[in-house]
Image (cartoon, rainbow, N blue to C red; front, side):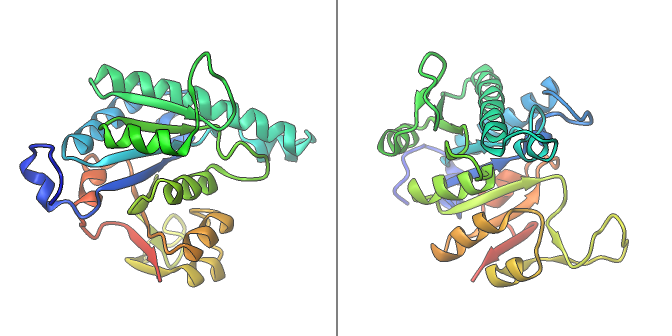
Length: 247
């Protein structure tokens, strides 16, 4: 199907190019702060397996395990200053993930929206696409480079810029439920949801700006649980896990 990866499974791929959104909290494992080396190594191994199937992968990672701009602002910091700190936190996570990926022999580039050329490349859209075409994993760091925008919004923006087939939102839960599954054991998983319902119900999995951007550009969003090993592979093969948000 136009792929020359040599992988027998490439023919079964439902998505050829994805943006994977990881929360910073996903990297700290059972803790509430910092980076859990075992968790990040396991994540890197799975990303490596997905790449080996012939999928082009862009990644946006949050920074909440190190510093969250909104929390800083709520404690009296200037919002733009706090968000700048949050964007730098995502660079730390991105460099850690790059290290873990390269230990799995996965060629990886970190591209930042804020110029930090001693440690990472500046984000240039055409260069990012070229990296993907060459089989490199690209980690998009520092959000959009602007305050007041979340890393979810950055993931939606980058996905559209590189013409990704889907935005994969990896979370701590199985998908979107009709009620809080922690409080209500009988809560039902919603397998498919429209952008409008997502916005109307004020679903907290992603922020409204990101979903509005996806709706306006018809970018599908797949919400699924990261902790279950193999889930990213299941998504790119088109398996109906978690929740799909689309028209």
